[in-house]
Image (cartoon, rainbow, N blue to C red; front, side):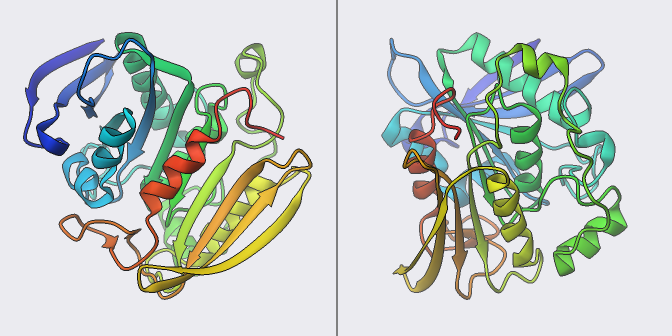
Length: 311
């Protein structure tokens, strides 16, 4: 059930509406903001779910990533769920707790339920629903992509962590520092009959990953592991490109399937810290010197509609 609140026209790009509301799901609820691009579109629009990092808000995250600006240009809806400080005092998504790492439970179920509500109340192209996040939000985006492959066509992960490598806060801190897991994820932990009934395609969800090589908050090995998990069992070859955008150099790895489709990308930003590459300095945790992660993610997503995007 959605509880609609008045539109705030100051938080969107170019005075476009930024809807603030609450989704109530049984005994649980989640606040959110929804960016709606201007104009009445008769065609269903793509939807991007954006999960903020610790200590951030949807407003702050939208400003820092400039994703509303991108959505305005491309006609996308952007959904920003807000983590409650009651659920986590630092405002982090609880990606490191086992009860929030599976389909049908905890925060993944809450976010998936909210996504479906937005799809039911707005004109959304069901084949073009994506999820992305920063840091803890990136880790939760990985979980959502794995747990709901019939819902999310592709995943964007910035400075995030892999699925199922820890199961408590101490393990999370160790993983963030070293990139070394404290436990191995259980095989098939998120597979159930309801996924199979939807006609889930085989293989991991297409994923694009960004990580700074000097990230002192989340070790870059975490980004490499997210990429490794996304390509596990997917036939193909890896290509490596070295380049420069802005004032930062980068190494870009792409996993190309035998059909010539790019299934996953890993962007390692030389000298980049714990911040959204190419972001706006007005927001928190941004690195305006690097490649434009928002633009690259949207390009990757547009090439991966559901049902035509796996190996």
